[in-house]
Amino acid sequence: MQPGFEIGFFTMFFGIIMIIVTISITIADVVMMIQLPRRKVSAGLAVLIASIGIFSAEGFLLLRFSAHDMFAPAIADFFFTPVVAGLIVLLVALFRPPRVMTAALAMAAILLAIPIASMWRAMLQREALDHAITRDDARTATRLLRAGIATGKRDGPFRQMQLVKAAYDVNPETVAALLDAGADPNVESRGKYPLIEAIRSDAILRYPPMDETTHPKRRFDTVQILLNRGANPSLPRDRTPLGLAQSHGLDDIVALLRMRGATSGRDGRVENLK
Image (tube, rainbow, N blue to C red):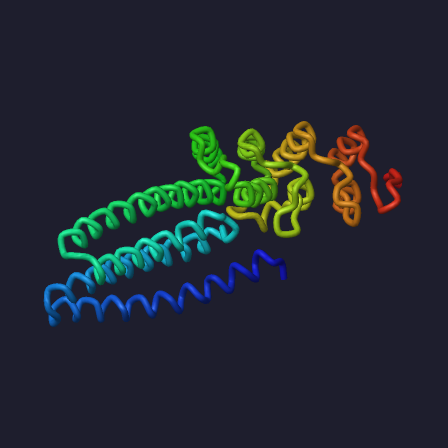
C-alpha cells in the first residue's frame, strides 16, 4: 500500500474516534455551563468553542476523504488550527480575569471562524470540480479551473488525480483544462498514468457510460492532446502506451504513437505491428 494511503486511512480512523470523543466532551461542556459558577461556566464555554472547532475540522477531514483527496497538506493545517486555538482560549479562561477572558474568547471565535470558513469554501469548490469531472461536465470543470479552483501548488496531487480520471473518461476538453492548470501528463497518480488510462478506456465501463460510436474519436483526441502537451509516448517502460494500443488493436493510436517516436518494451525497441 502506498504511504499516502496508509497515512490517510490511519488519520481517518483517528478522526472517527475523535468525533466520538468530541461529541462526549461537548455534551459535558453544556452540562458544566448549566451547573457550575460563572468562572467555571466561562471555562466550559472555552472548551465548548474548542470542541466545536475540532468537530468542524474532523467533518472537513472526512469530507475530503469522500472526494478521495487525502493528500492535501491543508488537511493538517485545518485539523490543528482549532485545537491550538481552543487550548489557548482555555488557558486564558482559567488564568486571566473575566474581562480579559471574554475578549480572548471573542477573538478566538473570530480567528477560528476565518480559517474554517476559508477552508470549507475551498473544500466545496474542489468537491464541485471533482463532481463535474466525474459527471463528464467539461464546461463546468473548465470554468472552475479557469476560476483558479485547485490550481495552487498544494493542489498538485488532487489535480493529478483528476487528470487521470479525465483521461480515462476520454474528455479532451477537461484534460486540456487540467494541463493548462498545471497538471503534468507524465506524473503517475496512484500507480496510473494519464496516457495509459486514455488508451485503456472502455466505453461501457467508464462512468457515466459512453456511446461506443463516440468513444473512439474522443479517445484519439485525448491521446493526441496528451502527446501534444508533452506526454512521453514510451512511459512507463514496463507497460508502454504502444504495447497497450497494439494489444487492443487501436491502429489509429498505434500510428499516432509511432509518429511521436514511441517505443515498446524495456529495451526501447520499436515493435512492428505484425
